[in-house]
Amino acid sequence: MMPPQDCALLTPEEMGRADRLAMTAGVPGIALMENAGRAVATAIRRRWAPRPVAVLCGPGNNGGDGFVAARHLAGSGWPVRLFLLGVREALKGDAAHHAALWAGPVAPLGAKLPEDTALVIDALFGAGLTRDVEGIARAALEGAGQRGLPIVAVDVPSGLDGASGAVRGYAPAAALTVTFFRKKPGHLLFPGRTLCGEILVADIGIPSGVLKSIAPRTFENAPPLWLDAYPWPRPDGHKYRRGHALVAGGAVMTGASRLAARAAARAGAGLVTLAAPAVTFPIYAAALTGVIVQPVAGTDDFAALLGDERRNAILVGPGAGTGPASEELIRAALATRRSVVLDADAFAAFAGRAAELAALIGGPTVLTPHEGEFRRLFASDHDKLTNARAAARISGAVILLKGPDTVVASPDGWAAVNANGPPDLATAGSGDVLAGIVLGLMAQGMPASLAAVAAVWLHGEAAACFGPGLIAEDLLDRLPAVLRELRAGGARYQNG
Image (cartoon, rainbow, N blue to C red; front, side, top):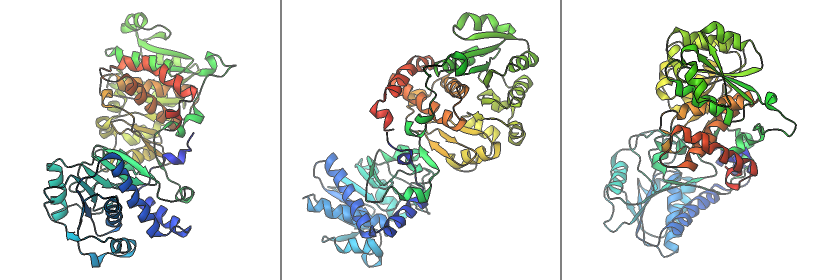
């Protein structure tokens, strides 16, 4: 199984440190650039037959990579034209060295590429760009996009912020992005992910040991991050050792908490109790088998259920409603200092009162908002990763910020970005299933942050395995197959 550090995502600043540490360890910068450009050329030759290529080079190291790629493609017989933003004499360091090795002409970058261009290499700006793409560079990239030319991005599509996935002015949609050593958050965070196309991570000779000095705190979610802590049933175990999950049921939207309760059971909780409002008790009792349905008349009855300490993980939110009663349930759950998951209506109950909610959190807690719910509770002034980290720090809870690029952030600054969730998950009830999986894993003693990332990945994998036509109930039926292959050691799971 690949080590967790292979899942690391490096910010542009951290990638710069990796380059410098590699050079300190004896790997010359010109070798790193040679390896990077050669990797781009190799990736292109493997995917396309020879055709006229326009290589767009910028004034920095990204442009240097482009000079190397152009040289290797030309050496393989490809027709290559190279266009430079700026003048060759202004290039410095490793980029100047490799520009000198290019024997072909260097034309100034113009807004329009030659008519016979059939493929474009975007080596204008790398992931650490600090200003908007504009002027001739933007015009050239926009023109290539309008013509439908396949674009191969070096490191990131120019204009894409490698740390946040945001677009600085303009960024083209690449067919292929070749990056180096490790991915960056911007490759996975939206809108960046939609612009990168296929992402290839090339080994350019940076020793993996540099990661120990960098100590990255952001990762791409994959089984190597959490599989060692996964609570598989023990040979000598029984249901009481596998935890007892408690779900607060709603009085109107009964489907939400039913999905969550069944998901907690599917995730392995030994027992699951659903606290059903007395008025809807018959609905819950008739619909659920394998889940204990307990009628409750109000907060006092719910608190009585919490009096049994064997109920060690509690979920409040799905279908709970947004009135004062929901807030009372949340307060009662958090007062136990046991594992708590808050979802859906829980965020409306505390809208605009993040500090007040944070003051109540004392035990392992996971909050699972989508973007709209997040904005009701927390400030949302930055990119998704920064926002999630800030909310985790402020609240003292693990934040599972849902979306096509779900982010899980821990109060200590550790974070993971998920990339395996298909668009089919945009269906009613899928979030309730996710909250239930988190609950079931926490009931079995899995640490909150690891339970959250494991649940997100399992949720996405179950959806991807089912495919089109997915509804929330299908996730419950597909989850056992995913778990079965994971436990059997399926190679694609073991390797992330």
